[in-house]
Image (cartoon, rainbow, N blue to C red; front, top):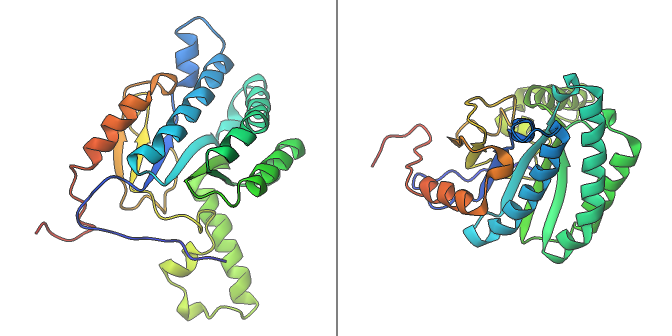
Length: 245
C-alpha cells in the first residue's frame, strides 16, 4: 500500500490538486422546467470540459464528487438514472480519456454499486492505468466519515494480526489506508451552486486546503470561470499553521 503524498508549501503557485463538489445540477434543470436528471446529463459534459482544461493550468490531479453516501436518500428514479448515467459516461468516454492522457480512478465504497457499473469502473481504471497527463479521481458512493471508518477498520485488522505496532500508528499510518492513498492532499476545494458547506467530502485530506464557494450552478461552471478561480488561488498565502514571513 502506498503512502499519501503531502507537499505543503508556504507560498502558493497554482494548485496541483483541485477537488470539486459539483453542486447544482438538479436546480439548474428545474429552473428550465426539466427533470433533475436533465441537469446531471449537462453536468457530465461540464466534467469533460474541466478535465480537458486542467493540464493547461498545471492541475495534475482533479477529484470530483459524483455521488455521496447520503445521496441514496434521493428518489429511486434519480438514483437509478444517475447509476445508468455513470455507466454510460464511462463507456462512451473511455477511449477519449485514454487518448488524452487521463488516468481515471474511483474512491468510495463500491460494494453497494451495481455489478455492471463496478465492471466498467474496473475496466477504465485498467485501461488508463499508464496515463499521467492528468489524474481524474471520481468519488462515487463516497463519504469522508465512511472512508475514515473503513480505513480505521483495515488498520485495526493489521494491528490485530501483528503486522503493525499500535504504538507506531500516527497520521501517516492512517493515511496509507485511506481511499486516496495514491493522491496528494487537495490544494483547493471548489464548491459550486452557492452552498457554503463541505458535505462530508475529503474531510481528512482537506485539513489545509483552500476553499472557494462559487454561486454558479455546476452545469454553468465554465473553463473560463475555472481559470479565474485558479488565478485567485495563486494570490493566496498558505502558511500551514506558521506565521507570515
